[in-house]
Length: 284
Image 1 (cartoon, rainbow, N blue to C red):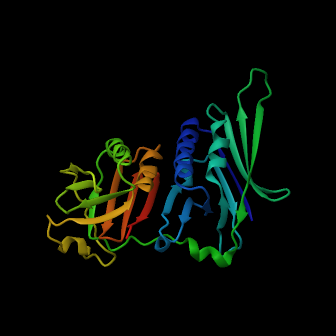
Image 2 (cartoon, helix red, strand yellow):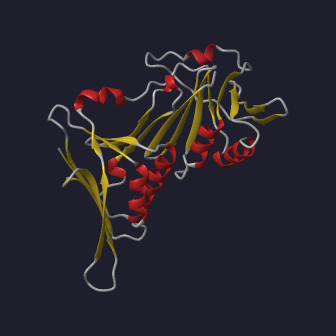
């Protein structure tokens, strides 16, 4: 099992850094899945137990100048590692003006991702700062726990308003309540609502637009059969929503959410070369 990669391009390095910062804000620990063409950051808290789950996908070719890996076996050419993304984020912070960053899977005393940052120096020799980030190797028999989550059969799918706007609304609301109701319809309208014994606050967004979805067999999804005006809603933990909005350092080109009434809210943030899915279960 081998993995080594190198980033030389500064723009790619900063972009990768921002992605890792976002992940670090969303997950204390996560699984890094490496394949020949992609990297995945996965958080699979069982949504049924009230945990959030996350699936973030990056095309390695858009970030790395060199990327070599050999998986566990020829027919399972993948590597699954458990890591604390904050550690990786911290290591990359030292790389803001680096000439190059090399990442390599090593095994001295324990499995580690070694991040070697080559910094420019005044003399002809360059300075190299290395960080060893401990990782756990996840055995093949557990890989099925980390499959891509299915897009739930939602009641409504809607584009999100500008995330900065949404973030400031949610930040003000979180002082009033621990939970927030997100409701939306297929007419491009979405409301964020707080209801407590003392106060009820609603922020309305309209003309957001609804993404066109077709299912695998080419049929329109069940959301198309709903009355356009009727709202689907879910009450979720406001801190989890705030965490998602506050963590965003990669400005997505598209952001949307799918609501399964009273069950789950599924967020999808798309950037040219990164996609992030985030599932927040509804509160009872």
